[in-house]
Length: 277
Image (cartoon, helix red, strand yellow):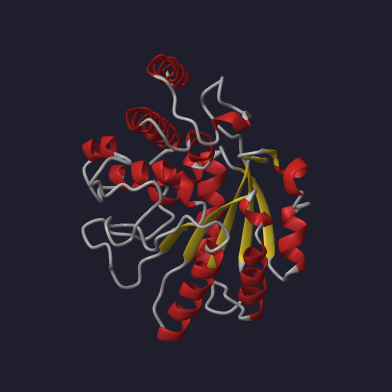
């Protein structure tokens, strides 16, 4: 996809995120909207090797959503990528649905690992990268973490392991929107400069505007092309805006886990449409 197509795709995904959460009456819009452009770049920018018709294809790249509460962003992305019908998005969080509040790998194709307990995703991604190297299988492992999630000690245990094991086919992308459910990350439990912290653990670190799809595609595609079985893992610090694309949600911690009302959804969808006209 070219830039205009990627922006349009990200907008469609944002519409679906907001619509499904409103329909469900619960969910996490803020952090889903902040990571939308990252997922769009990975799945539609030619970065990841995947096949929706063959979800377990040998040699595929893996994606792990460490911040599992942002499941609506992953679900909408997977639906648009062809893993399941887009119409199914409106079953989010309903009885009997495959679209649980957090991703369930036993129910939904394209979900590599069930996630939701914060801090565990990077450990899983590190284990996957180590396992792929041991088996000789190709594929890069990408994972998206929340910056608030990086307050969890297990994140840094995994970071230490990945650097020590020289997992060069592991890319951890931090959705750095600086907000968590209780407020600003620097007020709740300040993790400091996350780039400097990953570097101190032995990772290569790059920084990017997490809403610039061109920059994301170029960076992530380059990291994939350069990835080697042994080398330093890479941390991408992606500066983002919580609630991106909806004026009354942007930079508001209150929209971390609150569903829009129907009238708020109407206003949000109108803003998203106006932005791409």
